[in-house]
Length: 154
Image 1 (tube, rainbow, N blue to C red):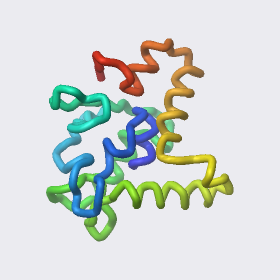
Image 2 (cartoon, rainbow, N blue to C red):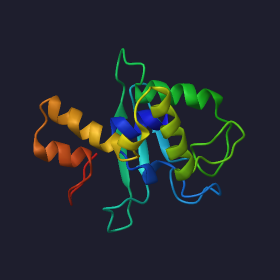
Image 3 (spheres, one colour):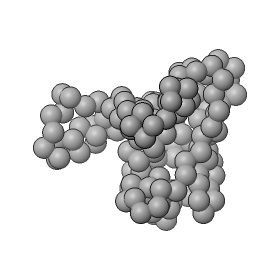
């Protein structure tokens, strides 16, 4: 789930996962709203946020794609225990931390036979924006997706 979300909306990892296992910062239970075709994720704290309002980011269904962020969310929601605190948790209900995310990501990269040294948590943002350019989106749209502009829209 977290890999799907990180890619589809070029999230910074710190916007999704908690700083530590205690569940401080990061995405919290109650920060995700759904419909059948989309999800809205409330990011409360992010790098370019200056006013403290947060930002609602929408992820749309990607039909026919195994990594569809809406489908991945549906599977995750079906097995995630209800509760407060960090939204992205392990099976034992402990919060997924940034350190753990990076560790899981490196294991996945290694499992694919790729060099761990060539990939990091920023790889999701880099690939997402590279794909946006390949799809023909212009510079302003790419900046909006990556939230690299002052007036951020979802």
